[in-house]
Length: 423
Ligand SMILES: [Zn+2]
Image (cartoon, rainbow, N blue to C red; front, side):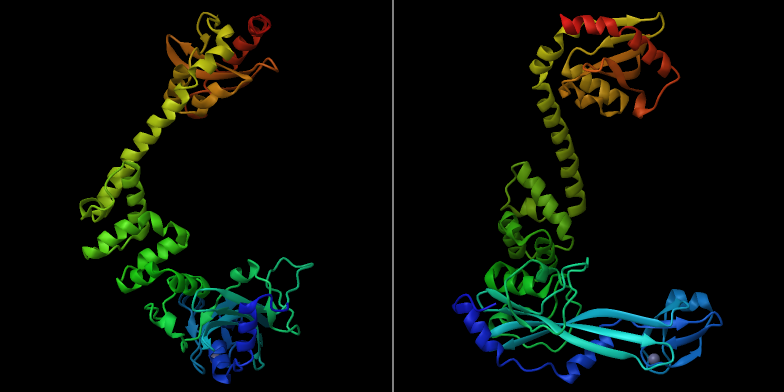
């Protein structure tokens, strides 16, 4: 892609001065970015796929459960008992560097092919670069990817040039892999307090957030990194929901350890209209207990709201089903009647622990309750268009011993329903 604007042109110009990857960096990637296998034969001879050394291993269980280290090259190996003779794998490493005032992330794919009894062969290719300006703006260089006939989004075509490309989401999904420990930072990023910890984030996201929003910097410097992680995990734009309370915590030296729980708790406080500036609320001594207390309160409030919402539909229900009210069928033992209000249906669903409680809004359904001596046995749903029973359920959706008898009783009285339907 030709540079589309001044920013692109600047990045392109700067990229010409970016040095080649060093042998040291690549070697580090091979040593740290690959999961090496210990190939174990049926007789217990292990071959290290990193250096090719073979030796008689310990008992199978120990090696499999605890893993093992190659006695020759000391690499930690994942032991696999297999007849396979060739192991290959692709991995990523990322190098964090600075160039001409830009923060640069260089992503390298490393591949290894190990054959038992042979020296392992390695290859690498730098497949992507993200160039980040001090203001957080970024551009991406990448090789082309094969997109036809593959389900992988990172089937890089290695002979294509590492070129400025249009920004697409795929680049954000490419795995970061291991991060080379020696990092070069632009001063703007260094000032934010970034100290090589990524808090479970992709470097691009973390760096851009740190460079564009001073609140991220504040969180790092105040040691509230759990919060930084949590809020980035759930979308950084949510920071606004918590920021006023976070400031109170920082001012009071209140360290948030379980950030997910704390954020949930703040959401509860907001729901109940509590003062989010008040340390009494936002810095609880026992977060767990307070969280649980509000959670129960919220569950109750939700249930009440849900009920109110359903009861509002009372008039609609009456209008739709009124003509069936008063219908009762009995065979002497079982009494079946049409439920005559939303409240009755909700109550039925609650008493029977099934989902009939929401069925009042189903226009094609008529809900009836089967009782013996006033005790609920099953709840019946009749389809008005098909004029037949579509389900009959006892407590917790189980059928009772009266199940077939109930269905029979309703089916034999379908003409009564039909007559009302026609009226
Ligand atoms: Zn080895």
